[in-house]
Image (cartoon, rainbow, N blue to C red; front, side, top):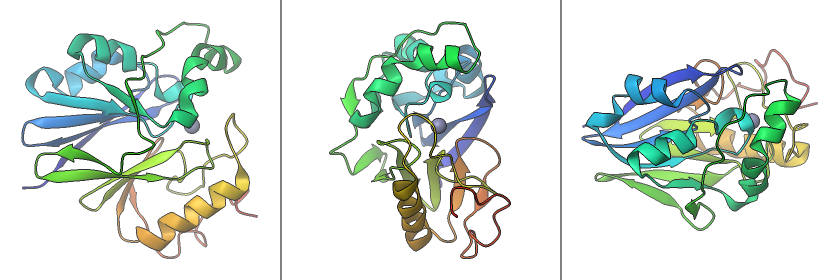
Length: 210
Ligand SMILES: [Zn+2]
């Protein structure tokens, strides 16, 4: 059987929230905003939610975690380097011009020492890919990869936001190009795409690469 992947684009910053489901179990990745919408569109009532995992802790990816956490009593996992970003989420929302306040989620476990998350007889592998933020991770399952804001269809993620580092970002992009050519990439914003060997050559903007 194949895994099912669903996406909803949420909030002012059009962040992608993903569902990875297999048989009756599911993980939610990066619920950035609109908890009720995510719950309805992903039919969460009909699934066993194993947990919420985040690629990173930027404010536009964390706003709906608390709402889902409370309703389903489901654990939230993120890398420990993202703790400060999560706790300062409302500050960064304000700096980005959004004065609504969201509930700060409780971090139940850190991803730091985990190499994979269970999903039926499959697993979701976790790889540390710092650069966009210090504790950015990507999730890999069955030919699909969720890199958060490290790479998009025609640009590389920013290294100039809180937690960013350009050298680390470049080496993480090289890591993806080394291991995941041919994978379907599901980024934190924008459309999904297949990672091709000439990805860097075909970028529309290369500011993070030069
Ligand atoms: Zn980000």
